[in-house]
Length: 96
Image (cartoon, rainbow, N blue to C red; front, top):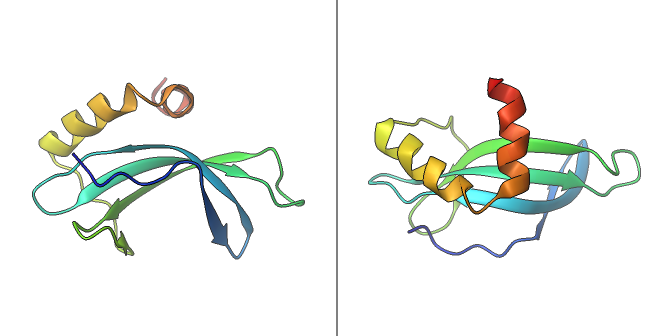
């Protein structure tokens, strides 16, 4: 299991800020891949949502590199997504 990260928690990027409201994560051999549902709360973007595909190292630090997934990570994230209904619904739009 990945390290428990508090949700919701804030995020800030130069184009907007808000909260990570749902996160599906899986602890694999090399890292902890995650899919996050971001809810913007800043005045310019309030009410909009994004998804972020990212990963953390096993010490819990955010990784600034491309997210690479193998079969085990796909299976693990699919299981983790069962606990994130809004994120799962958002992703359905991606694959339908």
